[in-house]
Amino acid sequence: MHLLSITKEIKVPASKVWQVLDDFGNVSVFHPYIKESSIINGIETGMGARRVCNFYDGNSIKETIVPYEPGKGYSVTMEEFSLPLKQGFIHLDVSSIDDRRSRVSIRMEFEPKFGVFGWIMAKIMMKPMLKSRLKEIFPGLETHILTKKVIGEKGMLFDLLPLN
Image (cartoon, rainbow, N blue to C red):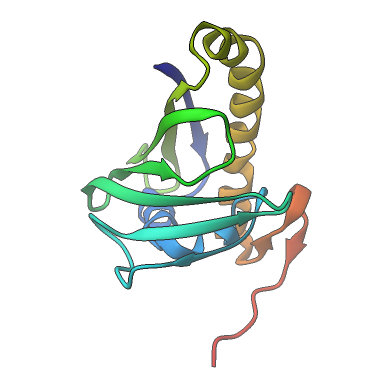
C-alpha cells in the first residue's frame, strides 16, 4: 500500500469543519475537483453511508464510510473508479486547536494495479499528482465555511442557492 498524508491548520473552528465534513453527500460544495455528489443508499452520514462523486473531468467514484467517529473523523473505501488501483481508502480527521482554528488531516492509502509496474507508476506519477490534488481540498474547505459559497472547478466561487 502507498500512503499519502497531509495535515493543515485552518482558521475555522473544528465544530464548523465537522459540520461540513459530516454532510457526506455534499462534498461537492467544497471540493475543487468534484462537480456534483449525492447519497446513493439513503444513509446521510455515519457508518455505511454511500455517495457518488462526479468529477469535472467526467470520471466518477463511489465511496462508503467504514469507520466513523462523530465529531472527529471517518474513513471511506473507494469503489468503482477510473484510477488504476486495486483498492483505496481515504481517512479524514478534524481536531480543535483553539476556538477559532482546527487541524484537518487527509490520509490516502492505495494499492495500484499492474504489479511492479503499477508500484513504480504509483511512486513516480500517481503519488505526486494525488498529493497535489489533496492539498487543494483545504483552501476549498476553509473558503466554503467562511463564505458559504460553493467551490467550483479550479476554486471558482459560486453563491449557494437557497433551499426550498
